[in-house]
Image (cartoon, rainbow, N blue to C red):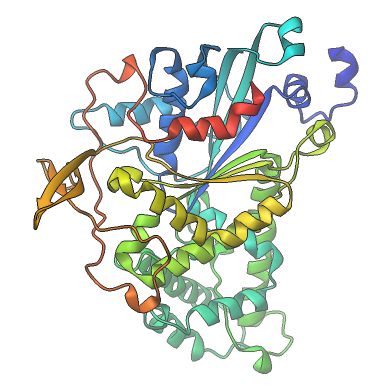
Length: 471
């Protein structure tokens, strides 16, 4: 049968991979999210939970484990040998070090494969093979690169005007001052030169990097490779920038500043963004979108709005729809989508429902669009690695829920009340300084991490939603 199928399968697709996809024995999970949303920690925890699922009582809502049907899971060689491996072993060493540290954030594409062996719950499968294997491929991407996907639908002029609109409002209006002053004094019809192109792109890059800093926490920063160049650092393909509101003064000269900027933008779309999309995104069939909502609370309404717009913009670029036999042969579409608010351990347990409702309100448009297309979509608050404990204090005779952990930069644990997560999105004027105090914590010290799963909040619910129908 393998020889017969090999005649039908393109040379670029290994027969084993084709069979796994066709007979529903493989899941490609995209772990998506903006910068510093916790993707690396999430993948590390997910892999660890599955590998230690037999020895852990920490997965009560992951039914294959809690019902005793899980036979085990182990790491396997990844199918795409040209893609860097996700360094799970290094991430675990960092989490279990003395002192423990958080895994390093994503700097490029990475992939890891798990084989999950289980007793099937399906009637037909029980008779054919009582013990089955599901291959789970987890793909991680820098959040910055995701923001490039919408560029595929925009012309250079549309993108330039979009950036111009963003920069007409604070805080971008002030932060972009030097870059705008430089491009506004240029004669865009004059002949382009490398020093001018380089300076314009550098000033624009500097503007994006300032937007990304903690005190501003802006998310919608395009092109993504300008803030995380990867292997393109120093390449001329990154030496361009948007030129808003200049169409009336542009002449058709092929070597002008405007023409060269536009040509490089189109090259960036084709050689970087489109290539990236075609090689990876079109093959996903499950997706989790991570968002650090608490980070936006600390910074204010502008950061919140920017995060919401960035996530919704990125999600437009994904293909959604029911997967099935034909789609397995000709290109799967995402059929399950999980929105997850990370760092749920940074708030008291009684506020988890508020955090989930808040994320739902942030992503209402994207969730409705996905559901309309027949995708199962769900919202969840989770903590990949729990680093705080619930605590209580008394204030003016009332018992108040707090959290206790070791803040980054300190050595001793503290108990604090970080502020309440609102049930509804506050009005712009209600985002006042000092209302929220969601600080970052160090990882927990773990005595026997290899004896069971990492401490978490609702990772079992995430696994159940993303994988339950495959067992």
